[in-house]
Amino acid sequence: MSQADDSGLKALARRAERAGLQAPPVETWNPSHCGAIDIRIDRDGVWFHEGRPITREALVRLFATILRREADGSFVLVTPVEKLTIAVEDAPFLAVEMSATEREGVPRLTFRTNAGDLVEAGPEHPLRFVSDEGGFRPYLLVRGGLEARLTRALAFDLAGQLCERGGRLGIASGAAFFPLPDMEDHV
Image 1 (cartoon, rainbow, N blue to C red):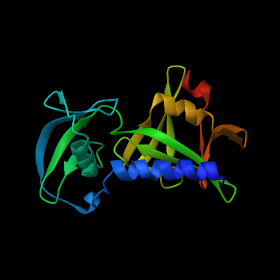
Image 2 (image 1 turned 90 degrees about the horizontal axis):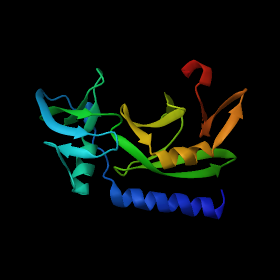
Image 3 (image 1 turned 120 degrees about the horizontal axis):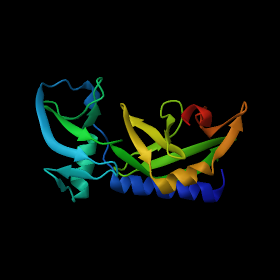
């Protein structure tokens, strides 16, 4: 790994440390469902309460730590004593920064989310691509079924990491290769 790569990853980690809180073990909590709360995450990753944006970043980061995706695909805020359904328009997080490094000859892509999560794409955190008008939108599994959609600028940066394996274009990170869908399948 080059010094430049190392310093970029360290800077990304410092920004994630300043921004994020560690997620509690929400997957082990099984409280009663208390209904829905008027909280919505729009497709740009902005959190709203009763129609107004939540402007306190620390509050958004706190809510992000207790967010969970249920087996039916719904999203809930969960504590040890209650569970409340919220609305999510697309993905609950945005991937806002990426560091491309190489360790032991293997490319590694590490992402920082708008909620402060630091995630290395690989078998446990796969990338997936959804066909879009004229291209694809990339998503990264962050934790527990919760994904981050890469910002448009970051998607262009990711395109610079394309490589070919077995005649397929895709993205390599860690021990994984994430092929792009075939264009003719989405025309």
